[in-house]
Amino acid sequence: MTNTVFSPSNQNFLSPIGFKFIIGRTPNVDYFCQSASIPNVEIGVREIQTPVKDYSLPGDKMTFGDLNLTFLINENMDNYYEIYKWMKGLSNPKEEEEFFNYLAGVKKEVGRQEPFRKATTDARLLVLDSNFNTITTTVFMDVFPVSLSGVRFSADPTDIDYVTADVTFQYTLLEFEDNDGNKV
Figure (cartoon, rainbow, N blue to C red):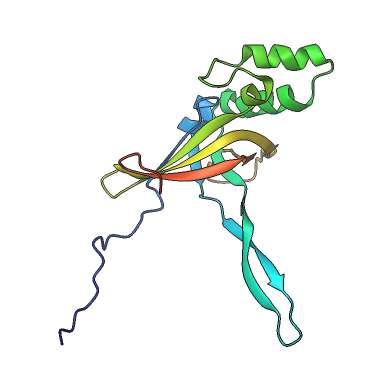
């Protein structure tokens, strides 16, 4: 009988600085992105009741956590305004015409002609290896912002901590692609 010891094919650890976030609707947010995370994924649980013991079985729906980003705000606040204008365009028009004017101003994206599809976009989180090559891509479909943090100014700090903002996105689905473009 042969005794074999398991050894993974890749023993390198994943670096927390090895990422790039891409969302075409907000190029300034992409450039200044400081942190992003792959959201949690959950499936529901069905409880089967019996007179003796209750059993748990896997559910039939997968739910996804929010997509959260932190980005440095550039000096003229272009990137902050990109998110703000998007949110305002979706939710705060004074007249219906303003909503359609916002959608008309959205740059054309393939497959996004109807209003709902124009209100959202797709985003990608590229995970990079130690040589900064893409090893996997998380694709977020139909992304839209739901929360943008405030901007805090303070004259107290002795060191300059540049101002950041947090944005939270919702989306309909996430998928993973390996470095060859195959779905995981």
